[in-house]
Figure 1 (spheres, rainbow, N blue to C red):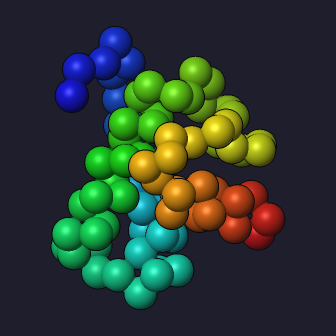
Figure 2 (figure 1 turned 45 degrees about the vertical axis):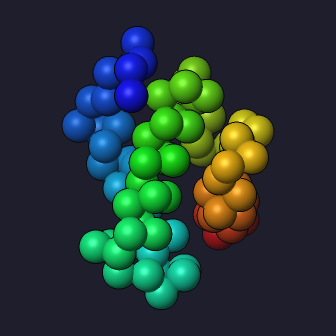
Length: 80
């Protein structure tokens, strides 16, 4: 995956929190293949579709159709 956006430790920590929340919500172990798929989709989305990290605190931007699980998760987290 190539991107002009380098992930910082803070970025990875934030993405890990989203992944952990998804795993808890879906009763999936972090070592499961589906968790790895979600992690890859989160990283791709963050690097290519998210211009400002602060947007994650508000209404999420439109996500790629390949990741409807992430869209559902982000909406649930924003309602919490």
